[in-house]
Image 1 (cartoon, rainbow, N blue to C red):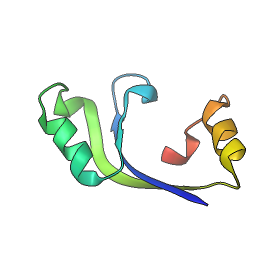
Image 2: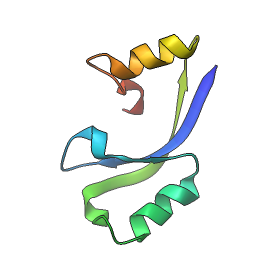
Image 3: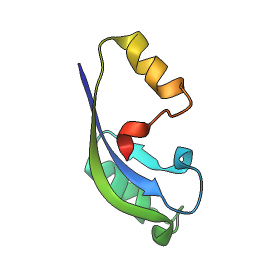
Image 4: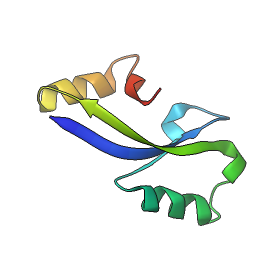
Length: 71
């Protein structure tokens, strides 16, 4: 299975503060909302991650290097 979403990576803090959404339009709208400084985030990019099952996805998200596929 494949998980696809869009992300604007947080440049000045932990990656857990990156903006993520199902569509590029949603991430762009979040950046334009004024709640975040645009300079704190990188360009909006598409992320795809392949996983075997729900447990595999959960395990990859929770392990120490979780989210490595966004790099």
